[in-house]
Amino acid sequence: MLINSRFNLLSLTLSVASGAFLLLISGAIYADRIAAGDAHNLVASGNGGQFVWGANANGQLGDGTTLDALNPVPVVDIRYNSLDGATAVASHGDNNLVLLGDATMLGWGPNENNQLGSGLLYSSNYKGDEADDDGNGADPGDGTDPAPEEPANTALAFPTKVVDPDGKPISNITAIDLGANFAAAINQEGNVLVWGNLDAFQDIEQEREPANRFRDKFFDPNIEFIDSQYRDGDPARDYDLQYMRDAQGNRYTDIIAIAVGDSHLLALTSIGQVLAWGDNSAGQLGDGTLTRRSYPVYVRSSQNDIISAIPAIAAHGNASLAVQPDGRLLGWGSTLLATPLDTESSDRLQQYYARPLVDGEGNAITGIRNVALGESHALALTLDNRVVGWGSNSNGQLGDGTNSPGSQLTKVILSNGVQLSDIIEIAVGSDHSLALHRNGNVFSWGAGEFGRLGDGTNIDSYYAVNVRNRDNHIFSLY
Image 1 (cartoon, one colour):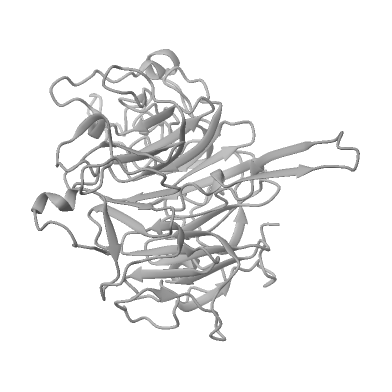
Image 2: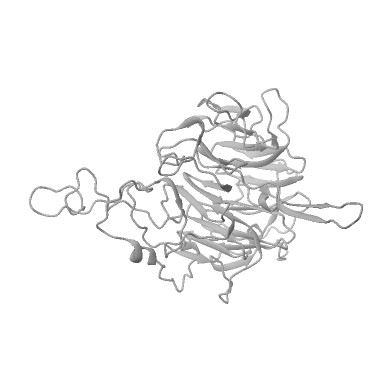
């Protein structure tokens, strides 16, 4: 996932001959407008409209159905009205988050770890067709109450507000990211919030009782969910929300970017230092240890120096990456997508620090602006706005015109063999890839199953193709 592009700021100064007029404009040139889940995609148009395509078995398209879409379709509310107002999007697996212009968030999808922060998760209290009068399930007919049934899949079928444990929408948010077990956001004060399954952040010696005030305050156990935005909804068990704090309990401030792995979090400070928090079983915190951390630690180089001046970070699974100011990459944790450059010590502990990465032939990876990580492949946006990739290529997800893996970085090309250029954002799914062109056109390549390429087919493509509307016209965000 592309992590910190929204922090590429534009400053514009205008002057007139008299020197009396000065205008300063600061704003995001590029926000995170595209996101890829396992087999679906979510994008936000220039006017904030939200569009999706691909697999939909778990309601990940947010259109109120479970039908796959071969072309972009709008995300809708419970009354099937198209939604707008999005400024950034994030997807992981089958779940989605959207940051709105009013600095609040929406989420939809399976919500299996309450990473969507809706306050609802299970469906055991829904009255189905075979439920008895007290809503406990089918009546066995022998005069006894039936045993409670196991909760069914309760995907949020429509976008739903992300709320705190008191049921109030979380607001003042400037950035979002989403992982397999939890989600994270930055607020306007530069604080980091996390919610979902937060086991990796708990103090092993002193586990906290999760805050679940939402259930106590707002749940009526006898309610029937009519026209609900939830599929059968029922309040989540153990809904927890935390701020990222230091060892003294103080909230961190001045955080400008975040990256979420399976069970760890990276946070980028305004001076380019990287904080890491959570699970560390693969060395994904980059502090030279394998110790789980209940409070953040600084990522360090193999000389034990805190890395700094970092412009971009990325995380996925147990892998962590950072882009250096000169365009080289640092990696730590399960960096199976690239090989650490072993130029210093052969000490085994060296692998648990941030180290330079090289391709399969030992060449340093250079000229990189930003990185997007997936399960088995990665993409990088170069300083000249082209796209390169490495890792698995079984479905053509590297976009080099083949389905053969290579030891060097591959270049994403069009069907005519010309390298894809003028790209401002990239995103990675399980076996497919996305890119946003400067003109607003969206390109895709890789696995075509479930229509995830958005070109009207379910056929793999080994090179970049245009995402298209149902009328076969080129789909554009602008």
